[in-house]
Image (cartoon, rainbow, N blue to C red):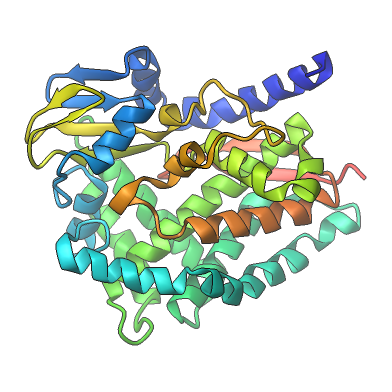
Length: 367
């Protein structure tokens, strides 16, 4: 790598680190200070940093999917539903089968015109030399896709705003620390606004499940797409969007790790990377460290093996069923942007979002 390319890569990493330092500084300072050990115990909390520990935490330790402070616990607490995040056994497998059909290769191809239409319209100002806010574009794209996936006739941007607000309120309610005044009421109100937009859902789909699908799909897209584009602009990776889109997409999802950590609770004793875990232990599975996002820059010409890159979507029975959709959507968006080789004009961290990301990312065409 040339000195110029190295300098640009460092610039890209410095910018991306801001989403962690400004959005959840205390939490990520803790993770950074403990990552030298593959597994670190702090009282009843076990921090899993290594690849083996992360994978073991999802595949070798029985998990309490409804425990307070976990994704499933927060979801079920707010919506009152039996969700993919907190289901077990036959219910969990049945829900995953339903989602797998919607997000199969054929299902994704059926959805693809939804987001490509949004991209064609929303990126048009770049062709005329204008600027765009990619966060706003990503929100509309994600909202339109989620609405189509759920069979809803609802405004895409309104759906995205409601899903982002519900996720942010829920995250603030369940973050470690002192209780936040009014946090519970804010989370319930945000969830109610989202549920109202999703009623009635597609026939045969539970409203609580629809809410969680919308929250997951929209928030990860709004977090991932602008961050990936900023990396491309700062590190001059746009050419790979045209010549090696799959490799570029895989590497950018790896280094951004849109869901950087997974909070879980052990339901029974087990081991992760050779370290004992007790029933009731709180597990913090750090996806960002498991895939080396914190120290290995994106390498589209020599991407990480699929079994490593895939970990940002979980593992085993806890793998995200939307991985194919997320990869195809991001690849299409980066390819569309690459035609303009956009540069970053303004990047503002979202200090309230559930996932590390930008609240504004203004792009202008470089050609």
